[in-house]
Image (cartoon, rainbow, N blue to C red):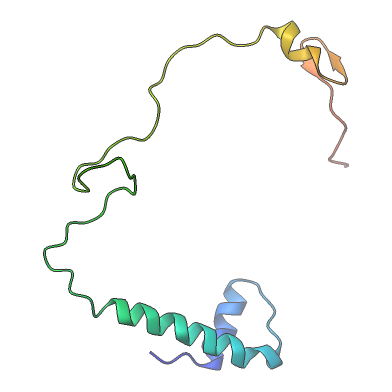
Length: 103
């Protein structure tokens, strides 16, 4: 697949990027290299290769999915006074923060 300048311009428009004319050729070459790499991957024989479900090193078999998340368990939490103790400004039961959105 050949990448042309109008393809680069179209992709830039879709991604709302401004690409200068002087950079267009470099982007065209870079994208052409990426497409060539993907096309090279299509040449690999993947017959009989099971789909990869996860990337965990602890999984002995890639054909069985394993959860890497911890078990849900109920644990204690901070009391309101403890949570507000280190706040620079508070008005129980709330933290006071600087206004960041101006209307």
